Length: 203
Image: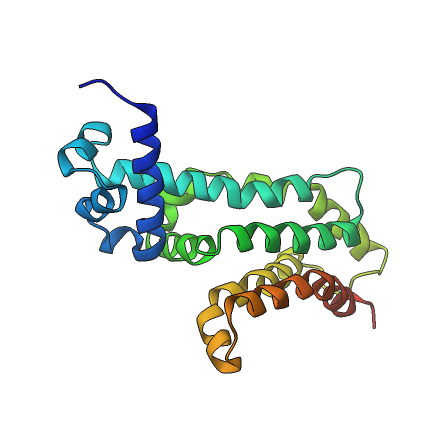
């Protein structure tokens, strides 16, 4: 049997859809084959196991997710306030395009954190970033009262990511449709930097 790149990509896309929806544990290779509209034997020819397919999908998802942070946090041309604005803008745009990614990554990181974090050097990307250097400088100058940059980053990412994780509940509470929810997220791109700046302002 000769490999076909289009079939391989179709299987990967089907696996992405099913894994995002069900997670690793609840997904069967048969589910992926059905989503790709191929037989199970063909799926097994291209990818020998569910684990191999999952490793490809999770690494791609994590890479895209963290790359959004990496580029912004290490931009030498922007200050701390500009980085806050860029993170809010870029992450919200990214998640609006891939709304299942945050829940998928959080679920799988919780289930198998050590293995997944080996695949991506999150510590090196974030802890050694220009963002953290700028935060330390702002603390030394008295512009920020919270000395731990992780609190700062957690607050920022929480404001960005939590609404997407809680999307079904938030939509039900306010009887929102998807376009209305997406409009709220667009509004948050302007509001989040305002809120974060208010939180870090020196008393």
